[in-house]
Length: 359
Image (cartoon, rainbow, N blue to C red; front, side, top):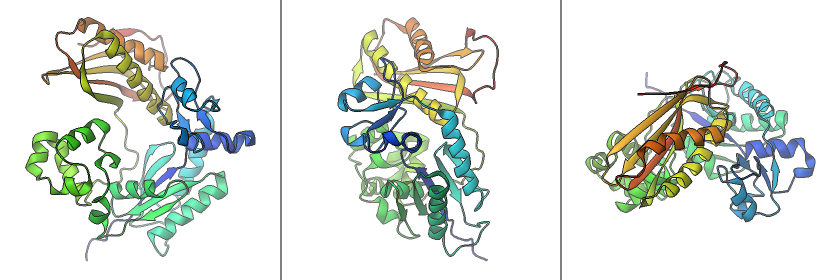
């Protein structure tokens, strides 16, 4: 008996945090809203669709967002409310499959190759899920349907907000071909720049690049990039997969030479990492600094807390503390990274927060 073609749905709530705030406070409807705090080191956790034409995006420093959109309304985050809505949404998912891989409170993959409730098609299930979400929460969701996770994610982005798009078997490669590699899930900004420098700008360019060349430049990730360029992604939907780390890194167009430049870059990284923590309702006990010099020599330094990091300022302070012994710089820096490991949910740890330096 032939193996059935996989049927994967990617569900992504539309501007989730901001939409919950607009739903619960009718005075915010139709207005540009940012979830976050408007303060010096504040960061936008989510932006409503009314704010996005001004260039306001998640992970953007709050003061920059306010300059871009003077009428922007800042609303403090209410993670208990978001978590409650997320539980409603996931209960809807569970009607159709037990193979659910949450990516955050507002986003998940569903494998409905063998659904619990029989429907005419994966598209019909996706439509039913979207309708149920709206009926029960008053919020809209976008859905992508395809035969693997990579394409389902691309599909859900294709018709946002409040849309549904399907990439059928046999059409993945042609769908990917004209898209910029920077839009691919799994290809970050730094990798996209490296690909562009090699003349790889689109999915078609990536497909035309020999695998051995990709391996030379991208190592173990080359096989994944080669596969997605051909519309192939064999990763399973992993129910209850534990996340091991949250981090961000950036490769600079021009190497950095000064402490001030590095601290400025780390401030941005800390904001992005903490936004990811808030979105996923996670924190971590270990902060790791990654630094790559212009000659590609690399080092990491880590510092561990007894209790999880509790805010963005503490994360930034730990990163700067790890950087301090490396100054003044012996060589220019081309890449800087900041991450949290030892991830836990809020309330899982008690006791005093006491730092200890890891070897």
